[in-house]
Image (cartoon, rainbow, N blue to C red; front, side, top):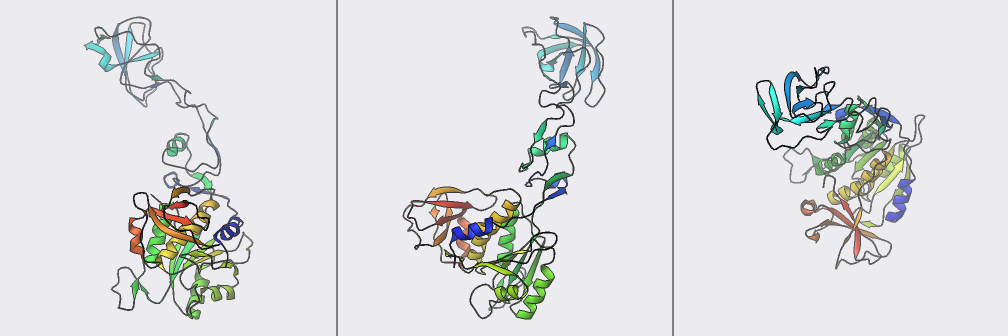
Length: 390
């Protein structure tokens, strides 16, 4: 059995080859850029009208004759002479010969004659004009490689024509649950059966971090069926996440079958509660890269979700160059873990550590925003691991 720190060390040493893949612009949020994004032209690309009104040359005049309407998306009009104003729409190119825009509400108009409203001061030259290149110049790097894309970044990508987007390749992973007692969520279980909740919770937590399993499977508690299921599932995967079948019972067949199929165990059992019987191993390297990494999570619902969030989410995100938030929070009155061990407890900012009845008590998690990691140091603070989306 190893410590949580040793498990972290072993997992962090497992490099993922990464590489580059391309995704559609609308699917890029939550991904990490593999290449820098450079502007293909100035931003804005022209002197842009910033308010509806009248474009003029600011030469001290207070009255003009309106000639023409400059609409957005149209080539620039040319101001006829010094006494002329051009009516303009927000977003339009500034007409040639103009340097200032006066908003409608600052003027009074009669027919084609427009003037500054009584008592309104003369505008400053350049008012309400978004000058070409004031945001960035063509060739400027707008987003460096390694940027975790959020919705606000899509403006920059779209404005310079980046679609699809080059992003860091993320691991291809699948989720499999084991257990003959499990039935579909929509099924009516017999008294000796339970609905398949682990898969729903793990998939939901994964998606909250922008991770999506490529496949899901249900595997039986018999050696032949488990072997066949794993042989079908493993090809092409970078990571396989299993729940159940990893403890010491007569039907905990997962470690043995994985070993028979060629996997080498990295560790089995961590000094933590809940989630002690966590198995992790790897298949031999392939010509295209490292062999499939396998996480065998405990089958109890709280154990599986804590272990998935604590180890799997962290590894999958790190493979893309992403990280998960961690901070220390006070845990007054909570005893330290046993020497060399770690305890995970559900937690919320309002209630602190929550009461729960053990690794099968998933209902206690409903009020939590994450969980705290209590070590054996006796510190009044603990590391807080928030749930995704929180």
